[in-house]
Length: 484
View 1: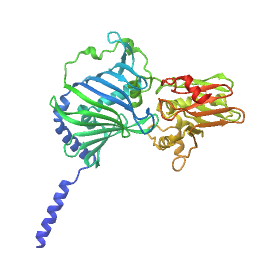
View 2: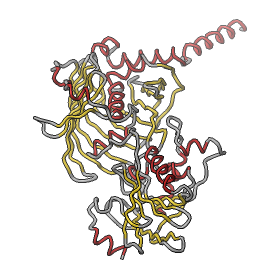
View 3: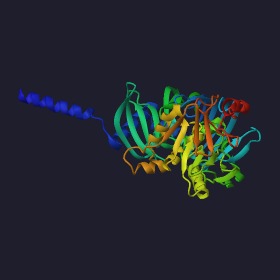
View 4: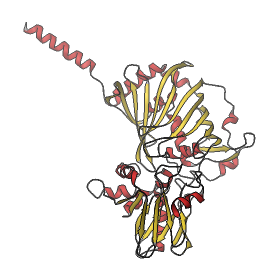
């Protein structure tokens, strides 16, 4: 009897060992082999030297909506991607009907070849050509490496490849792999039953939210040219869907014309604007048809006195104002990103070395107007903003920023917990005064955003607004409604 029990124990231990999940790099490569087999095999994946992918879809933006709890429909688009993996070249032809920030038609082509990029805009027969912004190039180049036909190859060649414990998402179990690509941490989720890659998520820096999960989610897998490929894709930031794309056709190893990737000598010799940092913000700006060229570039800021004690801060497409009070300063707007705020603060401190920035007035939460506000909080400024969205500022300040630590993140390293900040909300009307000068803040109903502040200086009869007139609100009605 004892021998029989011992035998059963040995059998159970052997079976348990056979079923144990292998972790680390060995387990990761086993899981990649299963995923490659599910997609058609390593040989078939490596045989795809080029692809043509035609798609339609829509873009949304979770940080340009009426409120931080919503998303705004940006466009409906068509896109054609032609990628030459063997020679490291790609071309994206993008056309869209935009609904925000204005009703419009936009189109452009992106060409990546020989470690540089080119942008074509305007007339299709004679387009205006320019050197692609460095950040846009780096971000598009990253996205090529995580195309479904390339993502397993990217992972197999990556540094730090390992398998993590399995996870369950909405009841579905997934195998989870981790690796690094372009210096960024990546997680890949493989469906535990089909072994197909379900999603791949990069942790990248965002101008407002810091460490941000940038995720492709794939579904609707079909046979295409000897491979299993997804025909539906969602692109998410921290769980917010901002692109839904439906693949219309996929062609593996199409015949390619070298002219598709031709970049003229004058573009090759042109200086590249912007550092090569991965940041999806510039892609979203491009798809709206608005500028992003100031991103990742040296910032210049200058103060121009437009009336006694009222200064316009120039040097970028998005501007700030400085209002001089008796013993302190009020700044209106902290647009774009930290580098812009640092340049503006330096210019202010040079002009007013003995006056602190006591208040930062944020007209609204949209990212292009608020991306640099954390820097002012690190300077000790009190944030004055629409009362209803205080939670948004709390969320931004509590977001970790380890990839590119900013001034506020560096401050947080020296205190226990999240540093406290001072917030004053505007519900209808609020006044900031030093006893002489009055700065009057109004909550202004408008079609651009649910919670918006307008600034009025009654002594100067000066109005400072952001995105009110540009969003279609008549400036006369603004003054009648709030600033009379």
